[in-house]
Image (cartoon, rainbow, N blue to C red; front, side, top):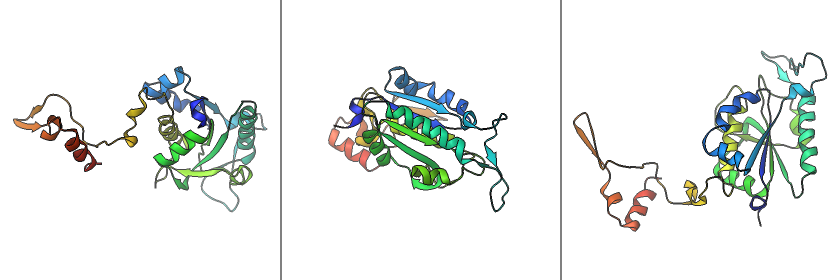
Length: 225
């Protein structure tokens, strides 16, 4: 049996800006999933693991460059704290993900695998010019990208992963058959009224959707995926 049938999924986010997650996690399906204890989200700020009173965690990169790089040690200590907590949980299994534009393209298939195989997902979110690469070597992280573009930090990618992985967890959507990827669906959907009038022009719902012929409807949907 897969782990997610029995254990709550916990997302551990290592980030300098935990407050940016509040509005997204506090609404709709993810908020309900947290309240129902289907998932939980915890944050670890590398500044809390800094070895100086000013909580500085960045330095200029070797070989030069325009920006600052997050030091390895504060991030390492944050990851170690998470791993220590995971080890105390019965039957827990953790996956460490390094969010990077150079990583493997994230997709729904990967989200399914992660949801089925792990109870704890650790996501390392970079900022500035990135994080000292030795963090990846020490923990043998999986580099993941959410798309062929550059963002200012790893917080948005982390939210994307939380959302997509959470949807694969039984009970999060209420009805597990709501997963679009597990049924025939279309990007085009319609509801009442049957005829929409806008600027004197009529826009009708496709006749096939009104026919009651499920075979024809499924064929119509499959052609529009």
